[in-house]
Length: 243
Ligand SMILES: C[S@@+](CC[C@H](N)C(=O)[O-])C[C@H]1O[C@@H](n2cnc3c(N)ncnc32)[C@H](O)[C@@H]1O
Image (cartoon, rainbow, N blue to C red; front, side, top):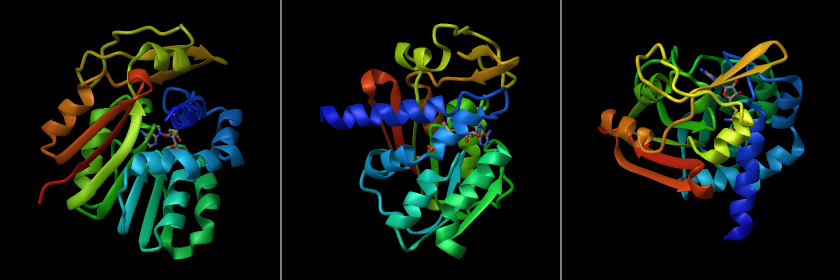
């Protein structure tokens, strides 16, 4: 539907603008405020989360990696009373904001500072892992994905969405100042963007179309579903960790 697509686009743009971060994601003050704002929470509630869930009905214990202001986790807790959530983010200020967002849910919610590429949780702990618009901020996104799968229980579900490398997403992130083709420590040739900003460098690594599917297959997930939207700028994904 046209209006939904526009709203989803708005959500993605908002989430993305909010994450114009430094090399290890530290968002600007106005971006952090945007992510914690009423309009962003409304968009998450009405459009982004239902679109990401694709009918999923999570229960048990879930983890959100790169949870930002906690808007997605808080809405999951509101929608699914059987669900407990751990919201994590690398940025300690976002951890604090997420703590405020999930405070109404008491002991159903925990918030922790964690690098998605190096999680301290034991193998197989979670029933659900949510990754929303954060992988492209994690230069080692394959590591973050592998960590997400490690901490899922067999039969647990991975759901999320992210930006794909496209003219639209490059414009959103780099405003035309995009440099590509930098070698990454993982050894993968990749597209990355470096934008000098207030004396800092903001780095992202957009996922190339098809790369996510390759990684999900490499991790031997089942029930893999990926769907591109917004002219290929965004990908939604869901998959199951095999028993
Ligand atoms: C675009 S925001 C998305 C926030 C939230 N998932 C949402 O959809 O509202 C991306 C978030 O990922 C976090 N992030 C980036 N790299 C990370 C990493 N390696 N580990 C944990 N969090 C990370 C940033 O601090 C930021 O809060």
